[in-house]
Image (cartoon, rainbow, N blue to C red; front, side):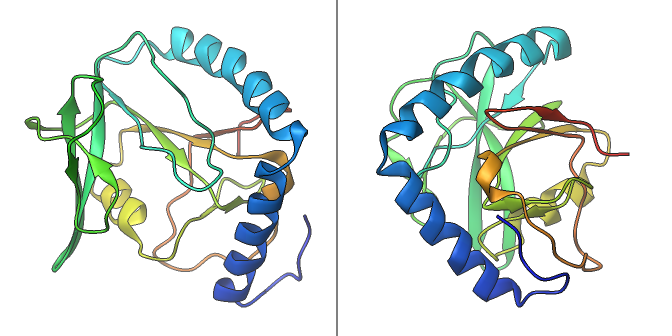
Length: 181
C-alpha cells in the first residue's frame, strides 16, 4: 500500500486498518499467517531471547501463537501514559490493561527481544501503530532491546518520521525480513 510522502497519520492509520480488516476476511489471510509463522520461529531461534516480549493479537494482527521462550505481555496505563512488560505464563490472560487489551499479572520485566505489531511500516524501520505512543515510549527507555516489527506486506507505506518515532531493529512480513540501515 503506498501513500503520499507526508500523509496525515490518523487518516493513514484508518486506511491501513480498513485494508487489514478487509485482508483478514479473505482466504489469503490464513495463508499469510502460515507464511509468517515459520520465518518468525527461525528468526527467534537465531536471536535466542532470554525473555520475549509478545503482544495479544487484536483485529487482524499476526498471531505468533505459542513460542518456546519465556514470554512477557505489555500492560499499558492511560494516566500517566506508559507501558511495561509483565511476565506471562502462556495461559489465557484474565487481566486487561487500561486500554482493554488482555495482559498478564506477572512480575514486571524487561524483555531482551520484543515483537511489535505494526499497523503500517516503512522500509527504513519506522512503525505506524495505533497512535497512543506506548511502544515508542517504552522503546525509547530501553534502547538495547532487539525489536522485531510484525506486519503484513500490504501495510508497507511512507510517512515522515516524527521526533518520538523509534526505529525497529527488524521487520518481518509474510514475504520478507527487512533489516533497515
